[in-house]
Image 1 (cartoon, rainbow, N blue to C red):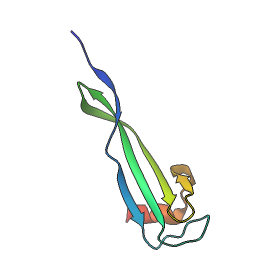
Image 2 (spheres, helix red, strand yellow):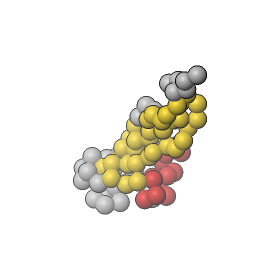
Image 3 (cartoon, rainbow, N blue to C red):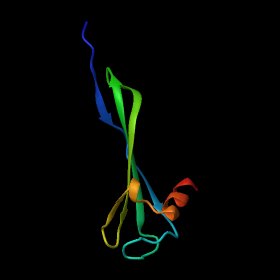
Length: 80
C-alpha cells in the first residue's frame, strides 16, 4: 500500500489595515497583512494545519514586519 503524505501551503489571504500607521515610515493606511496556512496532507487532502505564516508589508517604504514584530495597534486592527 502506498501513502502520499506531505506538506503544502494554503491560499494566501490579504487584509489592508486601515487607520494604522507604519512603525517605520509613519504613513497611515499602507500596511497589508498576508496570512498563509501550511497544511499536512494525505493523498492531497489537507488534514492538519501545521502553522500560519503571517506578515505585514508597507506599500510606501516596502518594509516587512513579521508576526513577532507586530505592534499592539496592528494586532488590534487584525482582530476587528
